[in-house]
Length: 141
Image (tube, rainbow, N blue to C red; front, side):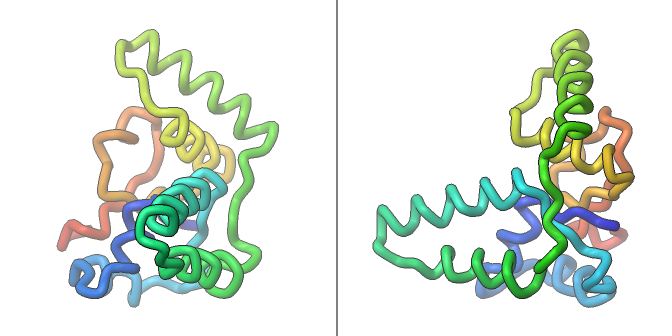
């Protein structure tokens, strides 16, 4: 199970997206790729900003397509177990002097709860959470 971070989904919506990301996604079994609720929230926020600014619903339509068709039934929720994991991660990050955004903490908590690997460009942001990480932007990834 691989959870795609926001930057991976956003990259696939670009007309000229990174070649390494495209090759990596094509090598994956689509059934093993998941989204999580905080990633959907970030994507919805970005899509709504574009809609309000430019009156373009392009990103909202793309988001709906992703969530309903491509990832139907494969969006992981921020549930009670993830909430408990989030609390531990946040407290530990603050203790270590490395506070993180709530969204990143939620994504990490969901991945840890489900034993999922996280595919992200921002491996440094997640490196000390004990997650399995993949960087599809990296040719070696």
